[in-house]
Image 1 (cartoon, rainbow, N blue to C red):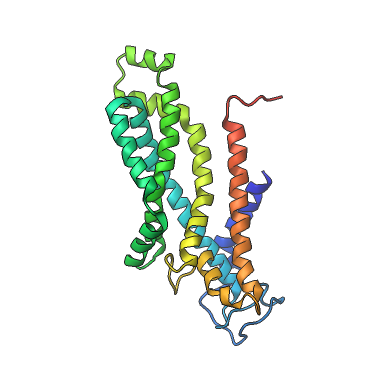
Image 2: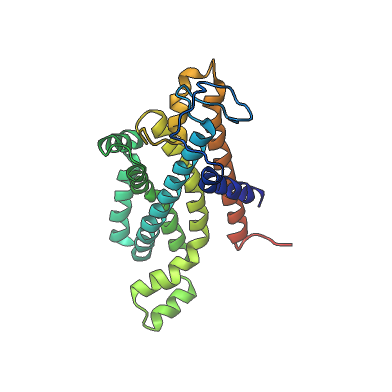
Length: 262
């Protein structure tokens, strides 16, 4: 609950803070490379940008990408894994071999090359991360469907004449949403780290827009003289990822029916 409260505060700051406090990440002041102060809590960069505004903008973009990736991963992976687990046999074998092929692809090379080709906008990075990470959700959903598809409620639905589509998406998928919700939550943190890694090596979001990984990349050379420029986005990444992971752990405990409640 503490992690959820912290994340909500950060989200409000990311989306509302720049408007309320008039923080424009594109505006430049005459104060260049300033240390953190009351006027500039995170200092300024070499061009005079308010670094707090840049970090909030970077966190905003990183979080939007992460939620977009999580939505794609769940929207594609859950139905895919449900179909594979329900039908089994050759259908399952073929579908899972496709998943295996995607899993062994060099992630950084493929996504980085495609992101560079599509000019590194936030939505192209989000789509590319989403279509390469849905396989994890697919495998988890498939495993859960395999464990419940022979239960009595599925046999009862089949005996009443329910179609395969109704059984899969009306009876099976709702019964495996607990693990899916937890995995989706954790994939938000994984997507933030993936986007930050791509942007850090110059294959993610490109200027004039920014992200936390790009800010860390741009400040890497100044770590000895102006360390706050490098550590500010890195600490923001750490706080967001830890908060999301704690929320995922809490959801796992809350949604797991095997947990003993006292």
